[in-house]
Image (cartoon, rainbow, N blue to C red; front, side, top):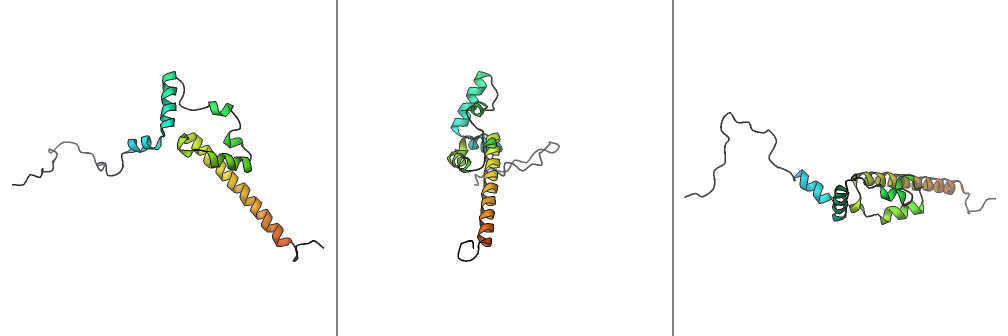
Length: 126
């Protein structure tokens, strides 16, 4: 006596999808897993208030990351940012700001290397 269930075979003539059946993670749960409780709370409050899901209030509170000049302040702000709480648009701006900061730091390094290579032995000029 075998109690294992037999596989269900569709009746002939019925349409069967050619997509594999859930072979990977559920795409919906992936999106929901990526949203922090703070983001979910914000989106719910925006929905209830009848406002857009985009958070634009923070733009009035100071310099936005996309306008922040590369330097120590931008590095501090990037280091203190909670990536889990960013919306996709904010995350995009975060990445662009980090790229600007890296380019700026690389130009500082190149300038220092150039200066080091042109300095005569002994470290003094003349």
